[in-house]
Length: 440
Image 1 (cartoon, rainbow, N blue to C red):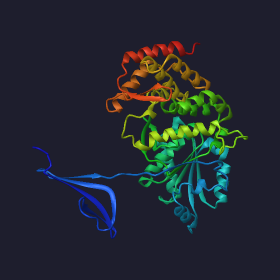
Image 2: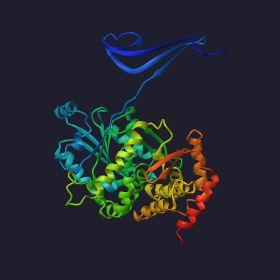
Image 3: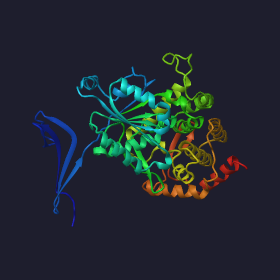
Image 4: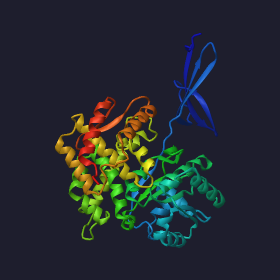
């Protein structure tokens, strides 16, 4: 029997006198507030079908601010407010402001006393929960622990955001917990690693590992705000600065030639200085390389993420470096950091792009030399041809049957390809190993 509708009607939703009511789309509103949501009603011989189209809009802020833990700086406490009125309302609340803070254990050792001093000086009721947030224990166990402690502490789910202070794993765990608690509680990200600063802090994704698969469980709920303070990077081990440079390299190769050239020229110095600005540089007049590189990386990342926060569009340039790396990273834990695994993936894909004729030999060598100058690995013995082919096959399964392989087509330019043949991958792998294999 045919299910063709015999009657289609479109309705708008209007709010008046404390209730929502349907209005025919061609009717004049009666003066109430109109929603962007719509209801379509179809009648068939089998019955009635209602189709709901309800746009969901998230608004969040990414704020660069120096010295977040200075008690005179309002950002950590009030920077998530979106208007002067909201800011004023929060300051005038008669009851004491509460904050629940989840902080990575290592970060707590370095900055915990400053965090306490900040909230005590601001007369905030607070609870700090230090956690060992590493890739090995990025699981539902930690998420559940966070949820239990939040429940004991008690929060207003609209006005008292949870604060996560740490690297990407910490931000992911807290973001996932916040998305579950009372179905969605606001949270704030404060990244303390370079990788989290330019990647994990600015998007909507969060999640945990499950059944030995990276980020298999998660949600798309952005923070109400991300507060970026480069002074946290001063205390990072050199390897973790290099780790974050991999995500910066990703955006440079996919979208921004100027950023790549800056990394070629200044990357080593940025690594050595841990992205701290020169004391002689007046950034408002003449921005230094640290400011420019972080700004370009974040802006290009936001350009790709903002229109596609829920990944409805599966063709994503930001997936560059994330096709082989999840399998490799989980297989060798804890040997490789996330950015290191991503860079090995990117280095191999540069060889694939060269094999397909998109990059010249000179461009290929420039990219690899730049990666190596940033202390990033460009090859790994566990990244076998078998692992690569398995990862590509998994990609087909989970990307609606298409490979959707981002590849650089020039320095700072890229496209998505679905037609990379296995023979090309094998040839690229052979040359990659011949040229970059670390000989004993």
